Image (cartoon, rainbow, N blue to C red; front, side, top):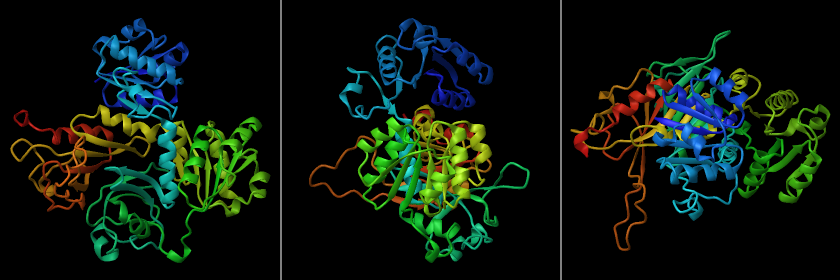
Length: 488
């Protein structure tokens, strides 16, 4: 696929790197020639210096035969105008814009063909705060990813000694934890002085303390899943109540507002080093949120504010080094759980699995929204896992036994790439654009979440969730679900 990316900032660079690794033809436009040159040296792509709102620059980037435009420059106005030019002048089929302003919603007429002609709006800050909200809701999880609007979830959990499933095999799952209806699809095991090793999940596979375990289940079963792998003493379990946020920028402000809107009795403190920003935060946040003028790396301030009683410490500034240091300090001073926002992938890899419980990359939280547009076949959702190494995708099975290699067949008879796992089958989901049934019509059958087992038969229109441990295997999975020409 030929894709133009506007903006060589952190988001643009991360998106470009991911798409190039999937053998897409990528051209990046930016006004910073030095940054483009550095990007060209590290990633196999083409750079064009100039403004993305100018037709001549877009033409030089290859807009006349381009399949997709991703506008992720720093300014909303630039991205919106670029999409309009791309549609009106060059007829680029798919146009995606990064928009920070909450005034532009997906259904806004301003984004339609008569407006800015944007097919999809992405907001990394919104994706990030929504994702962090899930981690606050399920504090034992390292990752929480949703499928089918939250009907099913994938969680990554660090197995702890003494949990019911630890030192037991996957085959013993039903007997050991009868109330946890789940499918374990991937295990990453850390060995001394070695990178994490991927363990293929089979019946005899043992779960060891310290393993990073990826599990799929229906949303209502998540508490049982977490109990099976992480918390072994319910009396010792404590919900997240006290939250400290270091950094009152866009992400910190959005998150504080989101947590307040949940209606839960969170005790929230926001640390911000810029005094003028503190005044602005205090004016926008309710009185229940305490805004403090200070630095998250200030040991005396953290101790004075009772860091040892904090359930979740979140370092969300724009500086990776500050976030790492603040999180390490908070953990040493007694914070129960810490999360650091880290843009650089090398830093995130280094910090993952250390004293920092969660090293979160902003770009990785929203990459799935983009990848769903790039993927071949009827892919509904894509989630990038382990900083882009693995993926979980929701793909729709189409056709019948004659036109499809999966429909009408048992899962045990379908050959996936090595290590890839069928996780869930979601049946009875409405088709996109179906809308509400007419008055007087029979009530639709409720959607089902079926744990994928060897004897499960895939039916047409099933939404199948597959865990893929190596990104290069994704194309093979997409080909497997592709229907033959006779289907059309």
